[in-house]
Length: 558
Image (cartoon, rainbow, N blue to C red):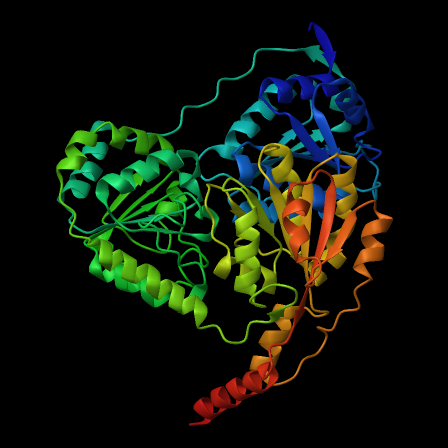
């Protein structure tokens, strides 16, 4: 390329790294960058806010394993994206955030939009790099990109001085991507030996296994052992596989998990960081002598659950190495009985069915959340993506929606940002255009993020957004009723969703007995659609909530 402007070097570097999409919003400081983006082969996805752009980049990574790229201006653009950067950190999502810093005027105070961005983002980013000179730009950007997805994936910020975009430099060679960390021969033989000795092994897997889903399925088949997944890993083993024990519904699943752990003689945790959600509120009980923990991050291996064997390794790479020993693994004998695993699955089903205070879902048969999600699952191909927001709808989806493919369920796992679901679904659809993408949000979340439907329309996406509509912040309302016997601040005043959708150029359907049969066609048709699903309190729900509070008060005083 010879001498090139920094803005062109930035775009060329992203292209050379295999990036195809950049999410962001143009502003005064990054106008030169957007001019270069216009002339590049990169697809620039302009969202309605930097917050939405950060969530879309998260969904892009979570659905595909490819680094999501976000760009903002400094100051308000950067701070608006902070919640999304924090979400990416707690979701273990590789997001590269390129922030163009306002021109610095030495000796002047109170400059426009000048804040200490490095100090602000430092605690939530994996790393922050500062580029003041165009000669540093290509190498720094590439290394930051690699760092996003090395070890535990997460967000990395590169702050680029506006002056560096207008300076010229030679486009140098791209740095080499570091090889993922793998086990040495002794470590590999150590974990293999433990697997061969075990008669009742248990696999506990997290999002770090998603890139090795087919290998995980083969290993589970060879071991003939149960597989439990964290929320982020659901679908790594399809949930209609008899070896998969669905347990993603929090406290009522914990006894099932702990009983399986107690019955096992070895627990192999693969690519999961044992966070609060990933360890059932830290109620998961695993004796250290039973636990082998494998992860690409040393920090994760030393957190929360001590193990008899910690192995720092890229999990998909490790699975490939283990499968080279198929013949040895096939000789071992599993004492897990098929009826024992079937009983665990049935127990899981009974635990889900025991939730009595779920809302009534209009227009489906039976009129329950389970009935709705069974209908949705029936008409979504196995490889489809469901992206949720934070709220009651997410809890219901996690209980009742069966995930049949890796990365098939995307939720804001450990930060739980409202406004996440719709933007994440847009990012997921752009990353995986051949997979059906459905966003599921509550009416509170849609009031925060609904204009992001405009982005889906502008990008020409085939996308269905489902809104569970009950006129409340449903999950908070239920918690208030259970704790205090009344509610405050949770009643919503949502717009007429049909008028709202049509004003954005979005097709609209409200589910009732007459429109139920339109759902399959809606999911398959091109364009953007909003499907409103009305929810109502189950008869006696308010009485039950108050009774539950009264019982808790009585226990407290006794």
